[in-house]
Image (tube, rainbow, N blue to C red; front, side):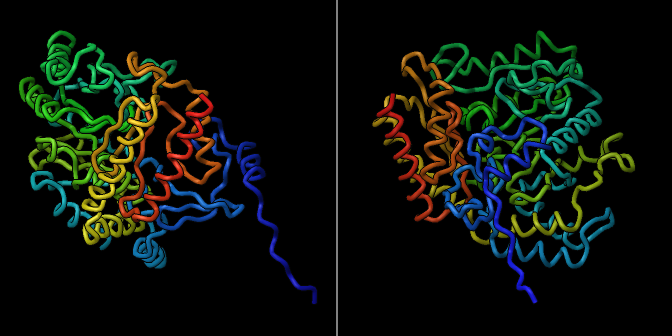
Length: 440
């Protein structure tokens, strides 16, 4: 009998070529630039199919709260997969998840609905706001990102939506409180929070008197992990109240310990009417949620039969994954670890600001951090795409994965990243910055 042999492992190059033959263009830019095919992950480490090791500071863009393949998470999914995976009927994992979420969320947000992705939850929040207020306008912010469906893209505050209109009517927009890149060229706090006044005026002068909600990220993710002044969210809550609108906090990336607290909104002084949740809620499994005040959640048509539901939302397998994720975040106090490791991370970022002239700004709350790369500190002109992509590829070659391919470099590693993983990753990242400075 001829002995069998295992087939040789395909290389990253071969797998990327085979994938590209069928996958439409538009994959995440960092995945294309890396040119690597990943084989496995543990904690904050990844290995590609060739066996090369990487420290992961991307974390699935804030999705990977528990790190790769946390034992409790893996077991929960395996156990549930043997029992029941799909269906809209009541299931124990969904009940337990809803009960746990009601405990960890602000007490007034005790009614929830489960979905599959962030965009879906934000769209649901928009439907609920319209149902409750009987109005149809939304105020969103420059630099904001809430998804890629037509409703959420109407609120997108970037050029990425160009060429995709027309969008649903009723969207108003105003500048976000991004102090480093203030559109008014003012300095905080002497600015008097002009951006908040501008938002009020935007509603006053642009609205048809039908503002349903203000939709805002407590801290903006896609724009570069932007952290607003403490007055920002309370000012928006005041504007919402003034115009009889709801406040929707999109906590997709900031929720579940990412910023060093369980949720960013209460820490920033507001109690939103609706909160949208995702990413770390299930540590990579497709599940998102809407949390709302009970006096709002029953509004129709949102709450009509089948009005708030979703085909895949809260299915038993996804619910089991989310239950494992959230319970582990709570049981292992990962919000506290996010604070501790975030402080160490921010200390190194500040050292780099002193050391490298092209580091113009650093910022962070917990493990939600960023550094702005500039060609000139006075003008704050972003570092060229050529140089940032070079920095990213230097990192890949050294074994550090970060979102350094853009001038606003974002960091959101796993909440349970260890001291050794963090230290090694920071050392490798500093090596790439040093190499870039020598070649400049």
